[in-house]
Image (cartoon, rainbow, N blue to C red; front, side):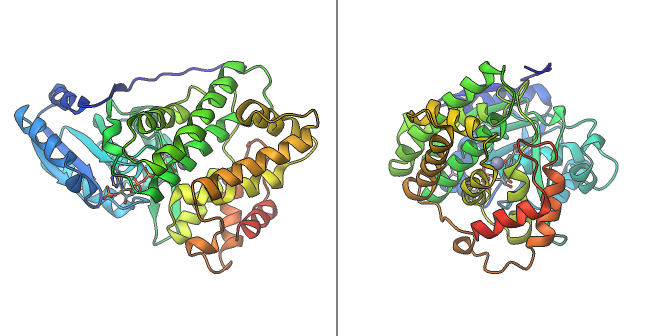
Length: 386
Ligand code: NZQ
Ligand code: ZN
């Protein structure tokens, strides 16, 4: 196990009715920027609940609405401007990963004397941020408990993740009932995203990180068990609760520290989103089995076989055969059980014009990953997924 330092400073309030803790925002000041997306929180009543608690606590609320899936830098800039001109004390994101990510960069931008895009492409410039709070409404990204934020500039076809310790939320409220209204499409995509986060941290040649590996396998079992239940029964509390907590733990650092190399599939997916604005979890699902097939070799087979045996209970001593079966199980889960479109064409990517450019950028982002990928490797994976 490699040396590591880890801090998990986010206060989590998990369960039904935990939104009452929003009154604690008062500790950070009087004026809050509430950040949300395209209106789901108004339809399912979370907006009204939150607003009442904030007002009762004596907070004044400014609103930044309309955060897009794959949040755009223009929306971030709008939020930064509001924080600066209105002298706001904190940001509160209510939504999925896109809303929370947007709120995070708004919070950092409010403390930065320059354009917020600098903070996306130069994470080291993030020195401080307003206190960040979140109410999670979609189990997927883990943004509610991590230091990452992913922002796009579609005018340049750029989508980049930034990170800083101060982007970890001060407090996040995880009420599984808030995810009952998530659509089948987003439930499946969210499950694929949390599975991918676990894979990115899990697949490595590090042999001694047993805590991280066994924890990762436990998370994967939970996701494979409860994803289909939530998909078929959106208001199953047990399924939504387990997915929600699994998603947070998949990316909060617990399974990454001391074990994982750089991520492999996310840099490729971020290029798909940057050029075609597709749903992140769908892109990951389409790429993952093709990536596994591409990197399968005598060297990686024992590791993929370990995944097959420990997560899917596969039997047999032949690592290569078990690894192939594990890849098939993964693909069947994503494309058959969760009914995620299985090709890039099926999510609207109908030409290969940008594959070269995308592969070049993704290759730069995957330096140091489990099996390093060249530009040519990535083009092959994109073509196999096409
Ligand atoms: O905008 P609203 O109206 O809220 O609707 C959203 C949106 O259309 C809807 N939704 C969310 N909660 C709902 C709901 N609909 C009904 N009921 C609810 N309770 O779902 C749609 C998708 O929301 P979004 O926030 O975009 O999804 P997700 O949480 O999957 O976030 C995706 C973004 O996060 C980034 C992705 O790249 C993408 O930009 N990521 C962030 C990471 C991080 N911060 O650590 C890591 C990830 O790997 C990922 O890259
Ligand atoms: Zn992801």
